[in-house]
Structures are given as C-alpha cells and as structure tokens.
Image 1: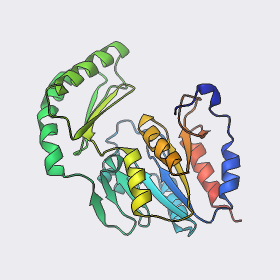
Image 2: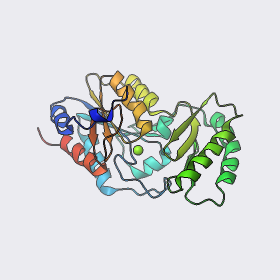
Image 3: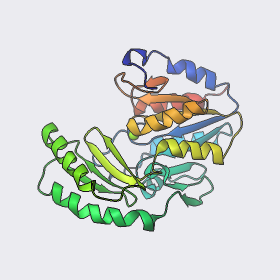
Length: 266
Ligand SMILES: [Mg+2]
C-alpha cells in the first residue's frame, strides 16, 4: 500500500546501512537512470560513468553482495553503461537479461511482440511530427513517448491522442505504461515487479537481505514485490512523496555514498 507523504523520509537510511553491515548476504536490485546516475539528456544517450562502474565492480566482488541492475532501458544500452561480468543486468524492465556469467535470456518472444509496435510507430511518429519537446524512443521491445520538455497542455493532449491510437489494437500481450509526461507500450511481462519475483524465485540465495533502490513509478511495482519477499525498498527522490518504499535517499550521489557504506570493513 502506498503510504502517505507524512510517513515518508522518516526512517533513517543510515540505520538500514548499519543493519546491513552485519548481514551475511545482501542482494541488491538497482534501477539505473535517476537512481545510480542522473538522467541523461535523452534516454538514447549512453554516457558510461567510470566512478559508478568502479563502485559496482567493487560491490560485485564482495562475496557477501550480489548485484542486479534492473532498468527500463534496452539491455544493449545497459551492457555499454555497465561493462562488467558478475552482475545481473536486466533491460526493458526485465524482458531481456544478461545473467552474471554472461548468458542472455529473454522473457518473451521478440517476433511476437514487435509486429504491433511496427504498426504503431509510424502513427506515433506522425503525431509528434513538428512538435517541440517530444521524443519518440524505440527500444525494440517497446515504444515510448517522452514529453518532458513539452508544454504541459500540449503534452497531455498529445499523449491522450497517442493512447487513442492504441485503442483498436489487440493489446492482450502488452502493457501500457503511463507516467509524468510519458507513455510507453511494451510486453506485459516488462514489469520490474515480475522481474524481481522471477529473479528471487529462480535464483534463490537463502537468507539474503533483499534491497531494491529506485526512483519512479515503475520501481513501485518492484517495491511491492520486495516487501512480499521480506525485503526493503529505498526511494530516490529529492522530496518526500507517496510511495511504497521504507526509506528515501535524496539523489544518485546519495545512493552511491550509501552503497559505499556497504563496503566498509567490518
Ligand atoms: Mg529510474
């Protein structure tokens, strides 16, 4: 259940860190954009961050810690951003994954998902033609419209029209994600909650403390599942806001500092 704003930000993430420093096993699930790194100018920008890569490398080498990065970006981007073995990388909300040993797995069939997206893409493209502040992102497995730099009125009007285009389509195998100035269509299983459930159940690590850190509404699905499995959720947000999470960190810089804390010698 999403808690009231007043309940948020009251728990001290330092206290959680203290508890985890004594844990034998810690399983981290980390979102990328807005959580580990500040947002790139557009979602197609791939700007690897050496300091972050070094931090993730050190976390992955600690025998007490296992790391999974669970992102909405396509897997090929995440692999370029985090060129490391020993970490599980999940792209498109977990539809496509690279396991720690390097093997890649997919949770849906691309040749079944793609044809409808091919139909929608030119229609969405035509809708955005000549408009300022909109960006059509083709992630292969999904199509998204980002309207972050568009005027509020125009953004809601255009996104509504984009939803109307989907109306007469066979959408049983798809999931429509709405958000703040954002719309995306992708496979139904492209869901961070489903992905965490799959990973925890398919690759069990008994006794591990589960922690999910994320910054947006797609991460809330995962917060719910992490709680179901007895774990802890941390929201990344500069301001308190309604969330399922237990703790809040203010920025990607704070997240990195907190993760460094896990590496402190006991
Ligand atoms: Mg994010």
